[in-house]
Image (tube, rainbow, N blue to C red; front, top):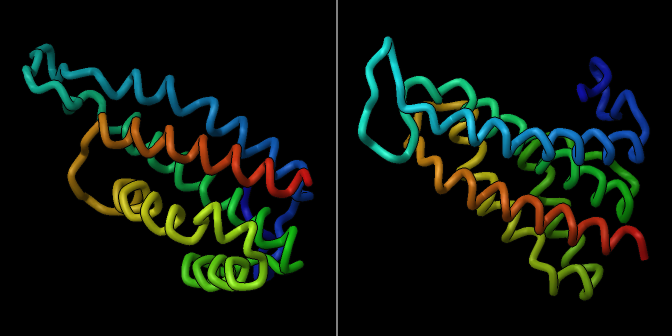
Length: 156
């Protein structure tokens, strides 16, 4: 889901954004499976962490994971602070503010989790860094846990 041009508001409601996040996250396992392809031009490569044939699904899985992480964080921030962060830096500031105002949110460590997950997922979506399929699987699992924790907090 893209944001409206020149605004900091989403073009859809937060409920629709949540559904979109869940739908995107459901596509990630299939992309991770496709990223296991170690063939390239009819040759099979022996390394186990993904081959040249799996580069595009790997990048797409990282991109969808990053999108879900940012959308879910925006939903969390909007729910409590009634504002949508402008970008990655503003999300981190907003999460820090949430943890200082609501101790029950601080116990979930959203700020730390967002920072840790976003480092690997965002770098593999935007930049050429180490492509480790097992690491991306691990981070996707952590995003699912983050998603579940955000859902439990905003549904109270």
